[in-house]
Amino acid sequence: MQLKKALPQGRTYEQVKNHYLVEKSIAEKIKQSKREERKLIYATMYGSLLRQVPDHPRLTRRGDAPLLLREVRSKLVLVKRFLRPSSTFVEFAPGDCRFSMAVAKYVKRVWGVDISDQSIRSAKAPDNFRLIVYDGYTLEGIEEGSVDVIFSDQLIEHIHPEDTQLHFELAYRLLKEQGVYVFRTPHSFSGPHDISQYFSDEPQGFHLKEWTYRELKPLLKKAGFSRMNSYGQVKGVLFRTPYAGIELCERGLGVFPKRVIRMVAKYLIPSIDIVAMK
Image (cartoon, rainbow, N blue to C red):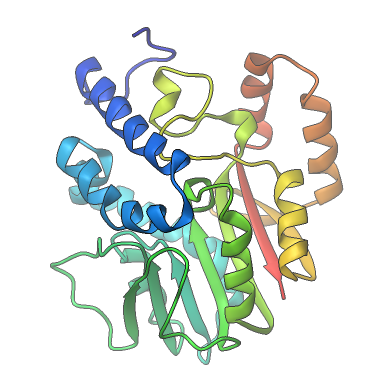
């Protein structure tokens, strides 16, 4: 298999190839499955991946404290302006729950919602934090209309395209009036962003679909969200970006070959940062 780009630091060709093949195999099962079958796959997919890929970055970076701190700070830049001491906060796909636990000191209550428990075993959870493991569809334990802020980072691309609308509808139901769903997901123009990037021009791993702003807007509107703002972040500073300009950029870039689109989008729209308001 021919490499599309240079190997990541600290990983060999065989390690990256194994990661790609394992992830691609599991992703294919998800893509071909029916909704009831996906519930079972979701419950075991990350455990299976990490067992077969012991050099996975999710495992090896656990000891990189500076990196993990930068990630927490980057996420805080996105959500902190929406947090109040009285807020109820939900993070979908919190992973090791490091960020959810960091948010707990700013709000009244924090819920982490994931398809498996990947929380830090060594960390003592704050008293106002709780992790809920669900099947990806039916969420119990959080009252509808009770949440002020929902957040997810690098989640939307992992959801089966048939289920993305359902996810937005669930988020909408959980939110109070005037509540917000803040999320970040890779932009398809600068992708693929998963392990596929080393061997393919299209996402074939756990990124089941990478999106554009124009594709996500109608899904959010259909779910009931009244408004959608887009944001950018440079060196820890968050700024609002004009949606009309982003849409124009997507339309303009869309006429070029994939390699040109990727090269330009990497600088202009590397990710999608959205605040959707109920």
